[in-house]
Image (cartoon, rainbow, N blue to C red):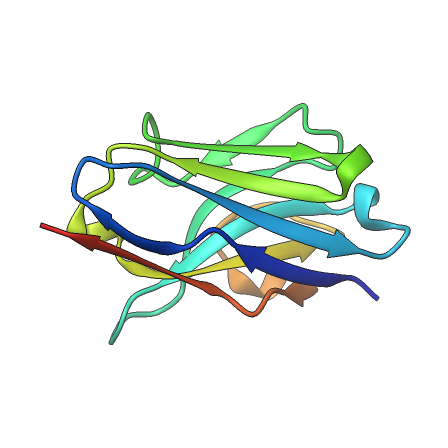
Length: 125
């Protein structure tokens, strides 16, 4: 089993930045691809970013490219999402995710084996 716990969400003004963290437990954590999804009120959960088990490959939704950066530190069992230039459209609950196998369509939630509990990100204008 892999347990995921997100932190770092909060309230930020438009144009600001936040760094989300996802602390993982489980000795096989480093073999999982990791990612972030988000879900805004009244909308379906959508893909944000993913990173391979080694950290050598990263993938981003079009909405995240150029603004968000996903990274992982396997020695610390932690994955991060650095979010810059935030706007109100980024307001959502952000969920950390782990997948043993992850291909295309990369945004499909069906790939995910384990989810975190979510952390709220609110961007004011």
